Image (cartoon, rainbow, N blue to C red; front, side, top):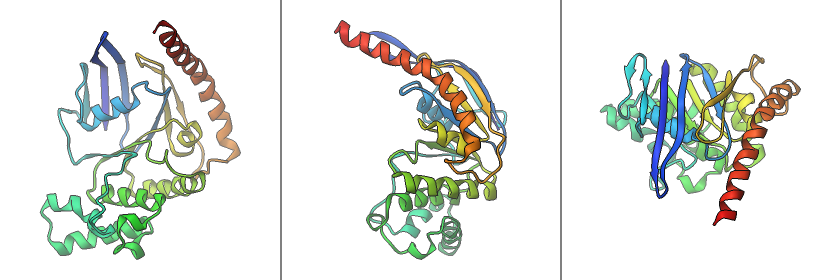
Length: 261
């Protein structure tokens, strides 16, 4: 589904070029749930933006079903932590919004919106406004809106980071059920290693800057999974051991920068 070939990305800064991604090579299968973890600021979101077509690589390329990604596409949708829901629209109208671009009739838009609101268990809140919803409900509206457009790839950038633990655990279960039903390819960025192992078929670990893929872990555990499942912990421990050195490296670099200033 996605092939990343020798991808590197740099940004221009006050002190010259800042290398963020370096020689990333990765294949993502159709229907795979891939999670990406790494130290803060290591380029996870940058890679997601390049896959989405929101940014361009400095070198290398990203292919979607063999075709070069050069811009945005409705086949690849992003759900950010800042959900971008429209407060002046009802829940149903928020879900219908993207469908207008497909020039569907009002009846078709309504049918599709209600189908996905039912899938995320929000059918009874279709006439509510965004300010009337909890954080978890808003997250499900954003998910329904993305799914309604029927993308091939769903890119999720720390979507649950701002939620309380109980709501996050509930959404882990909901997302696994929706993924099993829709078979979408999902790329999920998170700082939470337990969340990554709970959700992913595979977990990719990024190094500190310039980021390379340090390791990859297959998660061959039965679904649905809960974040407190005993079987998760061995894989979590292995990933945390990989991350410990990288996090310490980032901390030391930040400390040295402060000392030099």
